[in-house]
Image 1 (cartoon, one colour):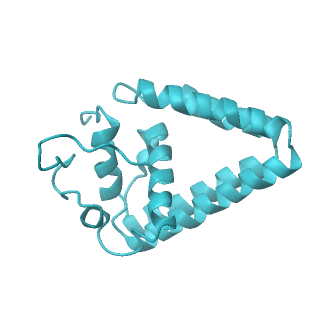
Image 2 (cartoon, one colour; image 1 turned 90 degrees about the vertical axis):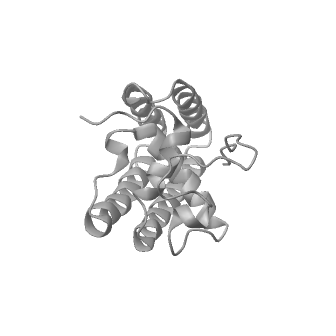
Image 3 (cartoon, one colour; image 1 turned 180 degrees about the vertical axis):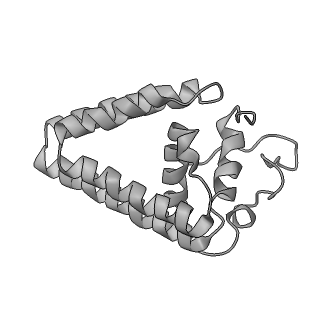
Length: 171
């Protein structure tokens, strides 16, 4: 068994290496957009319970991200992050999750020919997917090598700034 990545700062370049195919990144973008649309539909159809469930979702995500996945996957956090919104919106939210994973896994298994990082690092993968989506929504990462476009060395895990400091992880 290979050594686990110990920090999110190390994980982000790993995630980008697993998403070098632009068509795969586009599928991820479509899937995440579908999930966000399902969240919007959930908020419209369950205006009291869904926002409360998403507050729990956000709290679990924040706690799990702070705790990290260096030792083991945050499966309990992920289970809660799926269960709470599903209870509040039993049609739209799970449909959005299934759609997002179908698109992402199609990209991994069909185009990248690799195993999704979500199997080993589910929470960091979720955060990274949203981060990648954010870059794409701002017009970046649609083509070429994502590590090069973001100024990360393809061989290094974390790029250091010219003063030797570690970069702040942008959202």
